Image 1 (cartoon, rainbow, N blue to C red):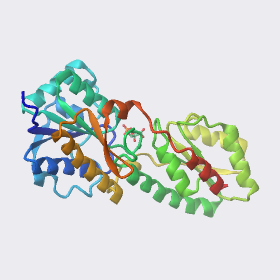
Image 2 (image 1 turned 180 degrees about the horizontal axis):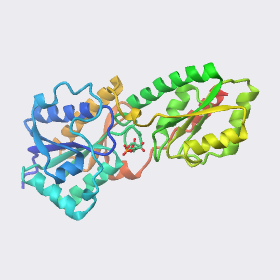
Image 3 (image 1 turned 60 degrees about the vertical axis):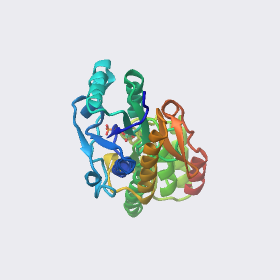
Image 4 (image 1 turned 120 degrees about the horizontal axis):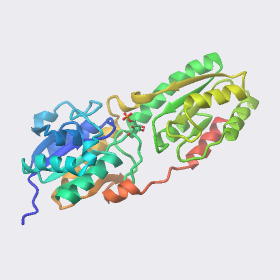
Length: 327
Ligand code: F6P
């Protein structure tokens, strides 16, 4: 039985991330360069089930390098979580003689890819695309750099008005399970406190930071709050602060999905181009069920299983440095 790959599908799945288009372009053009046919699957696994699949040419991916979002669109599919859904999806690939699939996404997307590989023998390879930076096997995920740049651009503006009005701003950033965005942007914007899902932050600690700031005559402050933190909803945190410090004028800003949009940064374009390119090289060399990632400037392939289940611990020193520098 020949193991040669001829027809390759590519999809984006889960939360979109700036640089996904650059990754699709890299996958498509590298595969075409190696004489393979390429198929784009619209709306992730949802589109695979609904047979929303088109063949891509080099010109299908022209002028997308600089675009945010994903032109293939993305979705979180409930039906693909079922055996029947995956069987329908696999049939649509088989009907086109598609023997390999490149999945650009995060942990949920890779979990789906592994199931497709195990149940239907499709060769799968992952490319890390999520603003959350929460995948093991790569120093950075595609989209993280742009998202953090978006955050600091907004927080710098918030800082201007906070300073003019002597206000405290609680700024909520994305990160349901991990606080990479909050930690790095907190350090980069001089946040007084950084509240993260990974840490058991307490009100005593937060109030003590605020007291130190008052003692140091700091008149305006930023508190960076990751959405998945354990203290609670950002509005609850704001109420608790108002109760403890009635003299402080507390405001809340939720940056929300602004963090997921925008033209990708140089770093994200480079990362997406390299990892998309290597995903195809990896497939051609016979790799499967792995993710292409970049560690210390070198491309590495990590089993999808590890990329999903293992974690790279957050650099807690960043929090210490942020605190020393902000108080
Ligand atoms: O997948 C990344 C992420 O941005 C999380 O940080 C966030 O919690 C989630 O997506 C939001 O997803 P949705 O767009 O489906 O609300």
